[in-house]
Length: 211
Image (cartoon, rainbow, N blue to C red; front, side):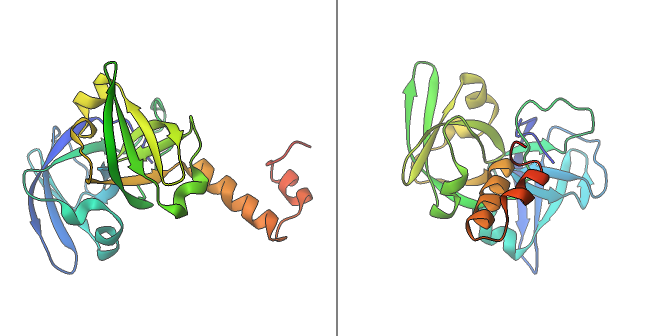
């Protein structure tokens, strides 16, 4: 699990295609643990090797299909977050590192010192988005400020612009999207209730409604 609070920026060093794609990333750290999880642009990947401050992860074909990782090139910058430890502060929101879809930046504009980022909203994710809800974009926990039929917007404060890659995003670029896990489960429960698979009594017993 992650929080969506970026703790370092990495750089893609090299990619080695194969049955799985090997990716070497330069990072701010050296104290890696074999098999640990690191969110790379919001994608939960496993450390399989490291040398100094560089580490290697592997991306399966499904990862390449469902994320922007297939578009990475050497020299590209990547948002990094190490896995949450028990007892750590949860400053963002619950993030799994399981990307739901790739969205496309459809526009940016400045408002005061902040940057408004508008991103296309895949139809399948629309039920999970609400204004003032949470979304993870390229690994960054953000608050949804506006939801439209085919897009949504977030606002990046100067700190987010400088400490992540999002401040340099331009229209047409793809970004990894992970919808709020709570919204996913609520939507799933409501869909089952609507289909008649769940009764009100079952929902109450599970704690989803008031007694």
